[in-house]
Amino acid sequence: MLFHVRMDVHLPHDLDPDVRADTVAREKAYSQRLQRAGKWPHLWRIAGEYSNISVFDVDSADELHDLLSALPLFPHMTIKVTPLATHPSKVTDALV
Ligand SMILES: O=C(O)CC1=CCC(=O)O1
Image 1 (cartoon, rainbow, N blue to C red):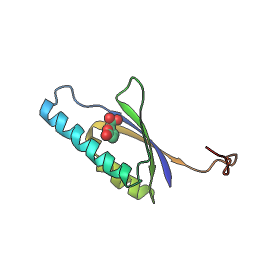
Image 2: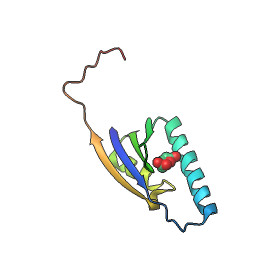
Image 3: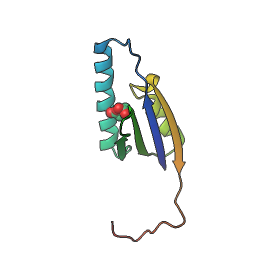
């Protein structure tokens, strides 16, 4: 199952710089582990914002929730999830 996920990061301005750096480093390592596992095939920065657009490929909404809620930045993010279904006009034999 594919899910479109938008994450907006809102780190507190008074967050200790060491805590901030550690949290961001843990977020990167966690996300790269999921990317390598094929669970997080798209991760795009929204230009000009501390936000990303991602696509997750998971077995269920429950799995997605578990993965998202374990993000180190989860306490500091607003997350909007959109389930994706197959479009009836999608060409399936196109060369891309
Ligand atoms: O910077 C972000 O958009 C938050 C984030 C998600 C995965 C990652 O490494 O950072």
